[in-house]
Length: 301
Ligand code: 13P
Ligand code: SF4
Image (cartoon, rainbow, N blue to C red):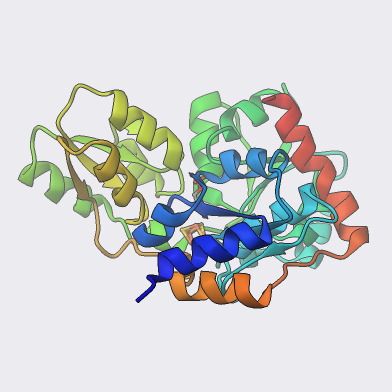
């Protein structure tokens, strides 16, 4: 019997489709994807792909970013319910009120935000470039949405106070300071490597802080043999595959993002078969949301 992987590959070739997957998706999804990466890498790739359709395995804001950067190219999600709770922690109305309270202040949005929010801001950032994006604004006063912890991390790196919206990633917030303490006691030789969506208390304990691809790069290049990983557990698939001789311990098994796991091989197959579910961004919003994303990509061309 033909495997689901074969069926996907056959259909993918017929449709001239490219499959993109975030580092947190299921292992089997990462294995079948043409590209696996962090939010910044996937946004960059979305501007360069040569295909007739993108099948995006990740969460809604990422597929939305790909659609905004590729007007006219259909972007499909295998499961349209894959959202990011943090992206929904601020509404456009709330942002407009906040901006009115701080006139003439620059607004930076983490890409983990909806297109409606991006349409209201000056520049976007990802976890890979947040420090550099804010640095590029010089002394300007900054409103940072929606992730208070990433914003806090930027503050500590730049020694500059930002206005922080109180959003957070529920998955990363499940990683507790005591998890790091206990892991360090259990694995005294391991380095602690965490994502900047973690709480300041966790970040403070880390040997290295990076985006998902930053964590991968650090672990791939390090001469250490053991690592405690403070991020969503899906990243362990790539870490282990690319470093079969090193040992990786999740800081917390609870750091499992259910939305990232919604894309399955079956749903990818159905998505290609039925050309569903297309992510659409209203033209007026897409036009305004494209500027801050492109500004970010220009800063780090
Ligand atoms: P990065 O892959 O850009 O580090 O993003 C993490 C994340 O939470 C995406 O939802
Ligand atoms: Fe959103 Fe956190 Fe899930 Fe990333 S891991 S999609 S930030 S809830």
